[in-house]
Image (cartoon, rainbow, N blue to C red; front, side, top):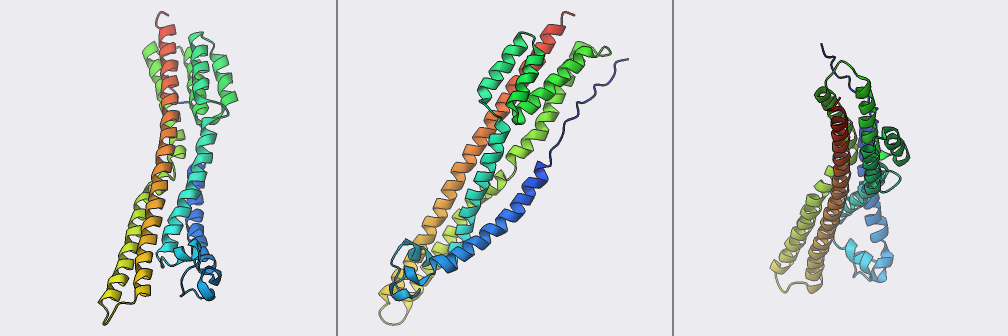
Length: 276
């Protein structure tokens, strides 16, 4: 009776909890920093004529402050995008390993074609990172299946493939974590910009509907508020979209490398043991 394949134990890092903890700290900190910048830096009297925040702005900082209380919300979103982009860049860079992923995959495939499994495993130790971890797990299972006597070739091949899939399922969540936050900020940035625009236009129309001739200064202030929020919201969403696409592209590259090398491991094992 054939023995059931034993899964190779894979160490699951506490990256999930660490990523959640980072998000729980980063979000409120970004909000607090944005509020402080809005009131104490942008709202400083040095950015206005005569040092009066209610007067005309003399530089871009005062102009942004004129955007109203929606501005710190949009600034919070922008700061979150920057913060989580840096965090994702660091994590994905570590997952890629110490060298080029493409070069690593080619080396491993060359060692597999020559039947040098030990050299391929040693290459994983040099590369490190998520891709190398998954491939090394598959190579370890490869060695275990070579020593296994109670299973046929198809069962052994399936066991190797399953082990690679399990190792991949443990590594991928770490790469994709917090990307949903960046994706969400795409919509939030746009909506907050639209909200600020609407509020500014409401103020402008209220001024125009007032009795007598409209106050040109007040009218321009409300229109400026609307346009500033529009610009900030669109900018935040644009940066969010760019960063999200950059990171998903990098993750897709790593996933493809894992799939390609994993397929090579399975095919090499099947080809070398079919005749036995």
